[in-house]
Amino acid sequence: MPIEFTIQPPDHYAGVNEPVKRPREFTCFSYDRERRFHLGDRSLKWFYPAYIPSDLSRGYQNWQRHDDSIDEHLDGLLAAIADYEKQTGKPIDAHVTTWRGMMTKIMATPYDQEEWEMNATFYRGCIFIEENHAFARRKKMMESSRPARSDGISPNLMQYWGYKFETLSTIPRPWGEVSRDEIESRDDEIVNNMEQYCSVVRTGFGNTIVCLGGEVDAIWDAKPETPGEPINWVELKTSRMITNTGIQTAFDQKLLKYWIQSFLLGVPRIIVGFRDQDGILRSMEEYETLNIPYEVRRRGLAKWDGNVCIRFAALFLQWLRLNITEEGVWRIRRPFRGSRIELTKIEQVGHGAIITEEFMNWRIKLDLQKAKQQALEEGKQDQGEEGQKAAAPAAA
Image 1: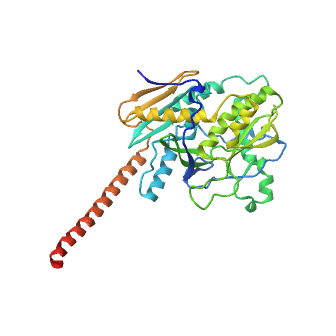
Image 2: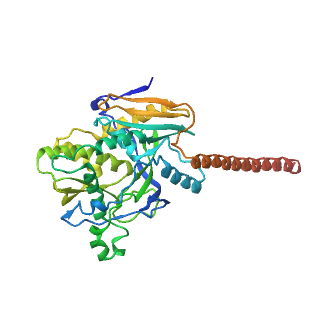
Image 3: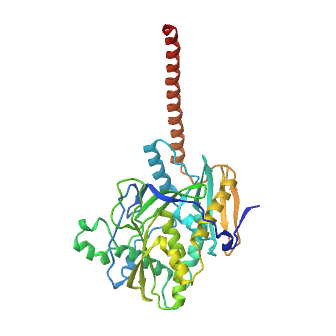
């Protein structure tokens, strides 16, 4: 029988401001255009506004698309964490490690009816959470097989519009190092969503420290020289032009996940490209992440509260830590429109494929290094005490 966490109405979580740790990037990694993993920021992009108007459908037939049938688990995130620990000589102090996408689903739960499934395991004091890839694939295939909308636009084309907007709105180096030809030829660039820059941050909700990895679309200027300082990231989104109250209401509801995604990684601004029904980019607008909840509340069309999302996440993570305390693989499931989150142990031992052998071997090696260092320090301390004892009679 599953253990259940009851999802209360949003008002249940209101009125309490849960402490939140500001996200601080402590490492990063990249995937190149062939989806090869690299430590560092080689795939980092800089924001440079797209030209208006632009046809977001252009180049759709040449789209170099990421093969999401491959389950990448937490592999890239764990490799980046291990590299960071090799530099510091100690493990990170997170209670939960996961992708930003998983925390987005959790935080949005009080207001969202989405069904989702995740897998989790407990390893050396930390819960590692990944998406249940098989469930996500089935869900996506069902969505992709749906007939095109009445206007003939397929879900895949709408997805492409978002990646095309990112291509039109970014450059590979700071603008002073990019030629005019490179900037003006962005519309001819083949869209490729295999390439990603991923930020890895330390954040927290209530008494739970969280390590998150997530893609960042672009940077506004440059990373600060001091590690951990706020970074001027830019999140890029596309949405339908707002022409009536109904569309504004739907957009304000969509802003919930826009806000959560950026809040989690410390992204201070979101640039939204507004398109018409034919996929033509008509305008752009900048939103400051921290102001979004207040703007939505002022308009009064969509009913959500960012503090409720934070409070819910803090309580859920605390509950998860009380119930996942040993090895094995756990399934975390939220049914469609469900009023509960279910936790079921599906494998009694091991960690499934959630944690890589390389990461576990590294942690064992790190423990051995720590034990060796501790033994050396104790040996020096013993020698010092013996020296003091030997010197005592002479002093007398």
